[in-house]
Length: 258
Length: 258
Image (cartoon, rainbow over all chains, first blue to last red; front, side, top):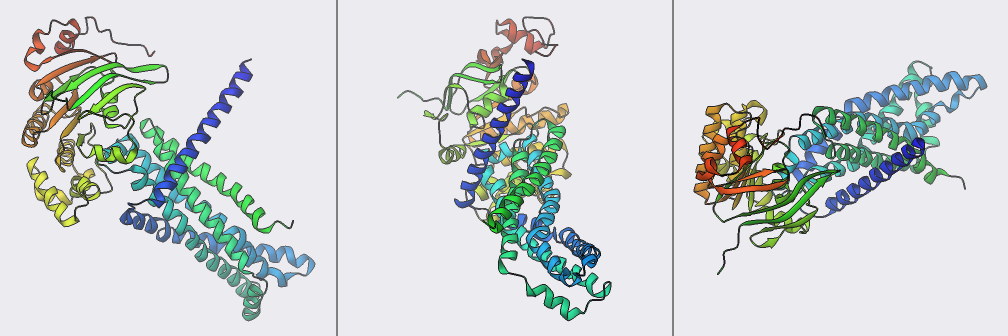
């Protein structure tokens, strides 16, 4: 009896949360396309997401590219396939690791900051103050972050792709003694536009999800410092999980063989 | 011609979960008068203000501003309606990402679409009206003391010359002298603007100073209204107990949580 009631209650809470998120997303999206927009806010968010995330995303990509080259060498050399290393590196980076790892790093950096900032604004009544000053909080706070997430994370991923491939190149040429020209040749040889494009589509969706989760959890946070802390955690965890799930779904959409 | 009350609430109810916070509020505020609503913590004062502003939607009842029903306004019409309002929040609710003058000018720039330089001039003038020097304008809100933040909040509330101003516990958390300074500023600002003012407070000194008329709220209902000078002989045991701050009387404090 108690078990059934508990299951039912959990299910209802889940449905309620899903509905609330859907309403939030719909409302936020409609404010992204209806004027007035706030260019100053959009620019601020773009700089925050795009520019200030460069170091962490760059470092992640660099070491990922390097370790990819190292790992695939030790694996592939067992069946004399070392020649495929450059291809493996560039395909893994552009299709998977660039967008996913950049997305996860940005989720930790930006999603958390968004949830904390908006959550604090909620509990200190700053969001109510926005409304009384005839400014729609969705338009002023949420829309600029969604727009910035959607546009900046793909740009970050382009940078991550380049740095990641360069990391693989460094290890390939200076540690594994490949010929530089042939490594670069191998990199281009099997790369198709769709590999990069699919990665950028992923990045745009990840960027949107990160901003959405940060705003949603911040906007609905309650109960002072503890509430804001919980909102921050929820924003990062839910964004990370959504990134991994959507990554699978989008990959299936682009590259399913059937 | 009958005079339309500036604000009229009729049988307004609101509940959160099982807890009924507003239990049929009836209240009228005439144009140009200063009404102070007194009552203990958790009696529904803040919820009432937020319902009038539309930050919360009441479950039933009618709220009219200038004779226009506001409970079912669409968001764009509500934004227009909110142009009439200014509000000083309990914690001042200043935007901490903006400087002091940008806070004060916020409604002018975002709401009234004034140029930044023109809005800044007005902001500095309004800061002067609440006794702050122009050099404060460039500071960030975090650098100010509590009393100064309240003053900036007051300057922001009066910046675009609203017809109606709400004050949410304007003196809470201030020392008695600063509290009196704020009280005098409120009286002055309301008089200068000719605005209608609604203040909620549990500070009797403040209520006596600000009010033309006083209303007492208890368990989500208005149980007494009268002229400010009649507060000491209201003939109402609840009001007497509150005014004199006695632990004994008809109002029993809920010591245990419900």
